[in-house]
Image 1: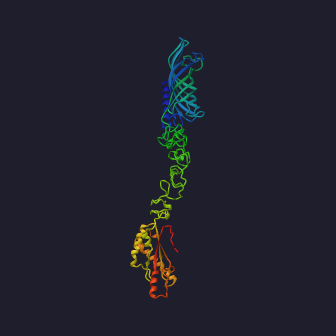
Image 2: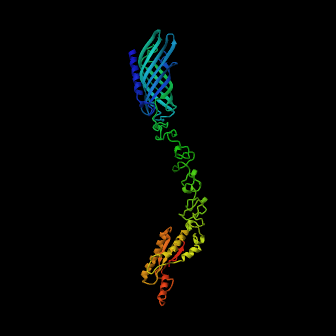
Image 3: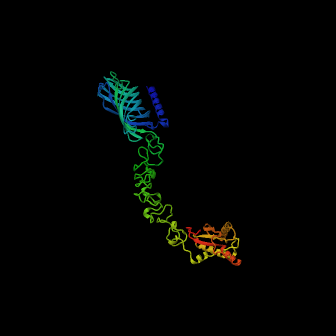
Length: 486
């Protein structure tokens, strides 16, 4: 008997090792596959002494189960129990026994198919088979047997309910009907083999840890958002918490308590202008980003509520008040000011009027030698003064008008007049006129003489008249180019 018991123990330890050797065997679920149950056990005897009719009183013991997840429907297990049982009718019919069992079990789970695997209540059915060892002191029909030890087969079947408290801990209650392969435990071998009701109440512990790829505390098998960033608070489904229910999780939501839109990081936008209400100075009126969410009718970048010139033309540079810039401070905005860098009255398009000295200067003429386009030294002082005047009136345009006398062909004189005007411009540029593009040249040939030459006069007189006509004159005006080019 001891040899048989030793073999059974070795088989039991081998099964325990096989069920627990691999780290993949952890936990009683699809990703925690091993479960250890420790429980209190109570036996109720039914046999010859009770007349094969009734079960006797409860006698206490305990046990340990090691269960292995096979599929959503089935678990396998190795079950060990040890307890006592006794029955006494009178001094001639009684027994007192200790019994242990070791069985392999198959469990049909209703909480992996009909109910969810993590349901709180999980009913199941189970069957098991293995061996039983017993030691009994019995008296039957005045026949006494003391310290009778035996090993026999055992079968049981039953039902139970698991109560799941967490992924790691559960409780259970179950009742099994057990039959052993001998009728010797009560000392009377005259009827059916001894039978028992076995009632177990205990706790189950899932070994190891569940697979949780993103480390959010929700196992992958239940995690609907398996890639949640580390440290993000999640709900029971493993998805980031979304307090306001706007579809933007709190860790990405700049307004986690107010329902908003995704493109504004979860913040609301009542007027739908694309500016979050928290940044919108006019949250009930559609506006632009440049004006912090406020309307801007003329599109100048200044909100209507702050715009003192709400009809500024498009493209005009404006100040903080929404009005066109006025760099020279003459009250005429630059976009209407012909001389934006120099203050002038509105009657002159924002340009200063020429002072009397400049007006007289502009009336002067530069004379040229016969058939020449060279600026004579005697006129350079005049041109230097014009350079100074142009510096004073930096936005004005100077028209340089070249003329010739009537000697020669019209074509020749036209070209000569243009050369004379260009010679004057070249000198002014050499003297440092700012923005030389405002110097405009035009040749008039012999068409605009100052003096009409009378050929009947002596040659000396006509020469003086022709010399007056060989000239360059000037006209200075505002940049609107309202110059007399005729």
